[in-house]
Image: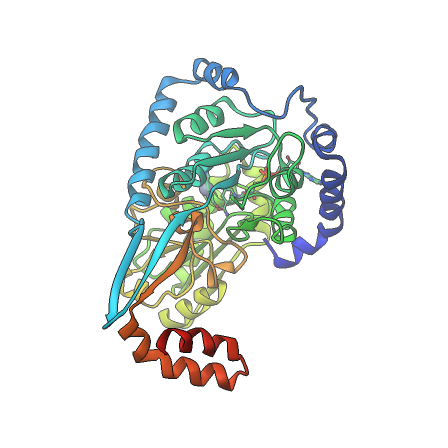
Length: 403
Ligand SMILES: NC(=O)c1ccc[n+]([C@@H]2O[C@H](COP(=O)([O-])OP(=O)(O)OC[C@H]3O[C@@H](n4cnc5c(N)ncnc54)[C@H](O)[C@@H]3O)[C@@H](O)[C@H]2O)c1
Ligand SMILES: N[C@H](CO)Cc1c[nH]c[nH+]1
Ligand SMILES: [Zn+2]
């Protein structure tokens, strides 16, 4: 996603948000008809529809979702902090942190160009492991049966068949049917991402997670066919997907190009891939350190490291959403089944945001407990500093306890 591309749709997204703010559910029905060409009878997805979806999908796919869910749960459980820690940092002064899940969050699941049951697991399992009691999901209609099965397996508590900027507006502002959430997570196209950015005043967001990206760092030791396959895998998401190979080897750059031509010929989503590749490319860097510097500047959503000593390369990486190391770690591992989260910052935002994890669904309160002796040990400092700021009542709140 070019950062500028958000600006291109700002006006139209503002109009959609204004419509939802003014007309609530009626706007959601009308906008769904306009953008998704679907006439809904109800916004909410019923439990009957979810139960019926199991009969429509291959049991092997249900089993695959169950196994992916278990791995995603395990990885996210490893991220959990203690719900409370307290430590006496000096005599009479005990400090700590209490961690609490958010009450109600919204997950956006894209559904325009592909169905994303895997994204249901990524967004909502992280929220469930964090302990969020109300997990609300929005995805554009028609909703794929596997998406319905995934939301059931993940433990989503409410689901609505609406998409685009109108779904984000409904989650942030609320309508007659949908109560607002505290935070909205999940990827989407430019309309979705722009709406998330514009509505942060009402609901916090995870980060901009737009069209998919891959950066590949490769040296002479890399396998060009594997690299080409990973590039095409991300290119097939969206015509706006972006792929860049940075290598110190001219031969590798040439051979990856040849492999891409070979593999794309029979790819079912060739048309989307070609558009994505039209604004993607490769760079031949003078040496490996220059290649790494450039990749840090790009800060890709996914970084694939295909070098002879990948762990040494990893040590020099500062900015990337999710990092895939070695020839047998295709990005698709993290997209579906290894357990890491595939909701990641794009458009260079990996410089300042982290991959979606349990911490996005929690907040931390500081805690302190000071005894009379503890207050004596810091009382003079507080009284002096409060006096210097002209805040006499602050000083008095300490003095009254010490006198
Ligand atoms: N970064 C990540 O973590 C991550 C993960 C998965 C997918 N993705 C990306 O998510 C994106 C999904 O995009 P998508 O389009 O398939 O699905 P989407 O659900 O994001 O967008 C579809 C919605 O866009 C709205 N829309 C379409 N045209 C519009 C218009 N002209 N005006 C206003 N609204 C309009 C419609 O309401 C529709 O429901 C892809 O770019 C994919 O690469 C990113
Ligand atoms: N690669 C995407 C994130 O950019 C996630 C995904 C979902 N399904 C397949 N891939
Ligand atoms: Zn993918």
